[in-house]
Image 1 (cartoon, helix red, strand yellow):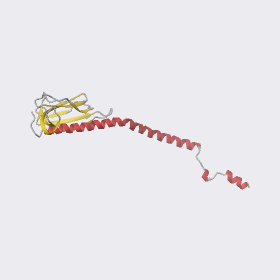
Image 2 (tube, helix red, strand yellow):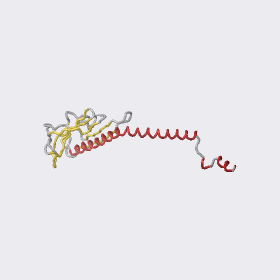
Image 3 (cartoon, one colour):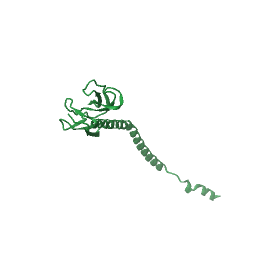
Image 4 (cartoon, one colour):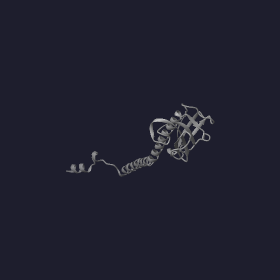
Length: 190
């Protein structure tokens, strides 16, 4: 009978556990890892809307740049109004409208298209080739970091127009730039 008592009091290898110190160390390490993961997750969630708005602005800039360069390539004449400036572009080009101030159409007509950039946005206005009457300005891009959008080469009687849309990013980071340029294919500059 003494053997039964000895066997019952001796710890078995299958009954070994963790000490209190081991449990406290493991819990502390687990809390540190979990805290780091939560911090990274919260940072990603908070930066999501800002990143999404930047992506939207850059996509809007790409579309605007493509439209401007397409109209330049189709253009007949870059107009100096009154002289080429970094925040304004005026040209005679083909647009698919029934009239210069009318609705979209299947065929193209020549109209005066003016891009004006001020504050943090650029707008597009379509008018008759002589400049009047004009339609309402339509905003084509917003969120710009600079209104210096157009670059003319040469500076007088330009044959090439560069387009550079610069978008603000996070503080401390440089701007995101979407750039392109074109020469007139259908005419000469004035």
